[in-house]
Each structure stands twice: as C-alpha cells, then as structure tokens.
Image (cartoon, rainbow, N blue to C red; front, side, top):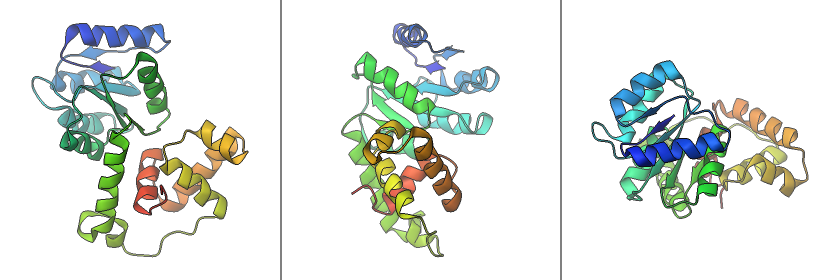
Length: 215
C-alpha cells in the first residue's frame, strides 16, 4: 500500500512497484483514510510519507498497529529531520528512506522491509543507532539496564549472527560472511528471537544495538 498526499508521486511509486512484480492493493493521500483502507486491504508493507495533510505519518503508524499489528512500514520521505526519523522508528517503522533514493534502492528497500529487515538511508542508520545507545544507557527509558534479570545465554554462533544483524546485513550477506546456508542463518535468528522473547528482526536489531554488538 502506498500512502502519499502528492498524486503524481503516489501513482509513480505504485507504478514502479507494480512493474517490479509487487501487488499494490491500495493507495491513499490521507492518513486517517489510509488506516481505514488498510484494515480491509490488509497490505503486508505500507510505503508511507511522513508529512500528510490530516495527521502525521507517525500517527498513521500507531493506527496501523491497531488494525494490522504485523504490518511492516517503510517511511519514504523528503525529510531527514532527526526527530521525525526517530519518532517514526520508535512508533514501529521498519525502515526510513529518503525520496532522493535511486529507484533500484527503493525497490530493494521494499523487498527487505517485506522480509522484516531494518532499512535506512545511509547516514540515518547512524542516527538511529546513536539513539538506541542513548536509551540503552538510561534505565528510566526502557533500556536493558532498567529491565532487570540476567541476559539470556546465547551460543557463540548466535552471538556472531546477532552482531552481523546489528550491522544491518541481510541473511544472504550473513550466510556468505560466515560460510553458512541461508536456512542456517534463519534458524540461528529464530532461536535467538525465542531466547530473548522478541518477536521480529527489528526488535532483535534493537536488542543487539542496546548490547553494543554493532561495534
């Protein structure tokens, strides 16, 4: 689903997605309408602008989480303003891409978002990582210092895979780096999710960053 208030841009993005083999189930130019339409259209991925005429993209994410808890959101915005990026990620956006991105990079970002991989325009990733480190260091804001209890024990291989996940590498890249099959990497990630009681790769990445494993 594509949500953007500029008709030409919205239609162009939908067309590019369709030509790349993706099924665009709906488009919308307003935030509240997008939430209503998404409830019935049930998209797997929403490509969402940050600035909309009625409510913000961040508010749309909150609404989407109510009607489609598992939906994945890729922000596609002209704005690289720090607070907007952080607010979107904290609300649950899987990734954040600037509209200046090349078409091939956009389509790759959509594919990775559909797979649950965090995707960020170069430069924004560092901003997000820095914010998670700050939160991790502050026990009053939900970092690991404030959760209590001992950290789950991961195997050496699980820790190694988690470290590469935190660096933003895809499963295919991790498999190539470690000489493993794609399926084996997926299994390690699933085992780690279970041990840490996390639900998806985005949460796993946040945990890894909190633990300083992206260094």
